[in-house]
Length: 114
Length: 114
Image 1 (cartoon, rainbow over the protein chains, first blue to last red):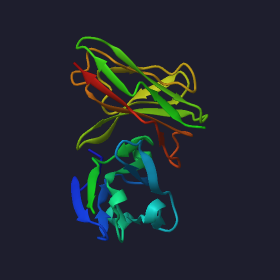
Image 2 (spheres, rainbow over the protein chains, first blue to last red):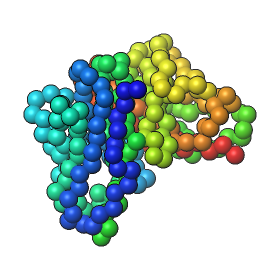
Image 3 (spheres, chains in turn brown, green):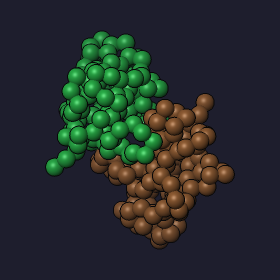
Image 4 (cartoon, chains in turn red, brown):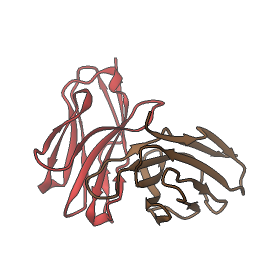
């Protein structure tokens, strides 16, 4: 079945460490890619998105993601995390092949220790 | 302020009862969605609507029903046929269901069956 996969369910790291969260999808053709973040007790909000153009996209709060079409990947990165980055992160894909529905990965819970 | 309002925030239901979750948006968006969030499974699409008086089943529609009589409203009914209804429910909207669009989310309703 076509899907969106996030490789890590839980990540624990210390402040100032670098973060990379993996996301792979299996849809062919035109796709739009998103990373959403859900901070504790808050609603889901958009971190960054890729529609076209430069495959390296920058989002809010120092996050960036790289679209690698040949690998069907859209990994999220942050060079130096802060305690306030503790949250759950979701990769999502909007694919014409899937009827343009927004499909989410399973999420990655990130805990940043002070 | 423009946004998506879900109510109530917490909902308790006895087994065998139907319950309706409210979702209202004032963003003038055509498309609306209902997702269910369970730990480790990400967000799974229940139903979505591209336009008033039209809606389609998502990936896990069994035991749920929706209506879209007004552009700004997309209520979700969790019926007694839903075998495992305890979950966090998220409503979202987007300008349209074309590929080039992002979704905005409400704060969610946590449903507990007692």
